[in-house]
Length: 139
Image (cartoon, rainbow, N blue to C red; front, side, top):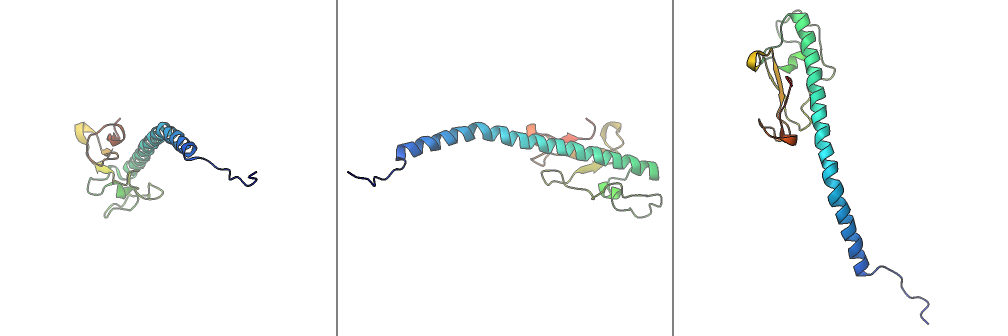
């Protein structure tokens, strides 16, 4: 009698477990990573809303929105020759968007808007869909 017979998993049992884990990962991963993309889009929209509030306060104090050249930085750092500036209008400066790209600010904006704020999404270029879609201040 062999009292010390080794107990363990066979190669076939290990392969079955690995296949099951792979199938579970294949179902869960797309849902998880899709959620991350939606979260970044929501953060971008919230940041744009924060810029809009700061821009409105800037306009109340100075009588106009910052120029394109002054950019969103004017919400945190006082522009030269801007005596009525009572900022900063943002708590922590101007962050990059969640994909680490700079926001685009134009004043005046297109189509008669007073200003435009744009994030070009994950791809960092104009246009796209899903996570690559542009996120804009006028929608």
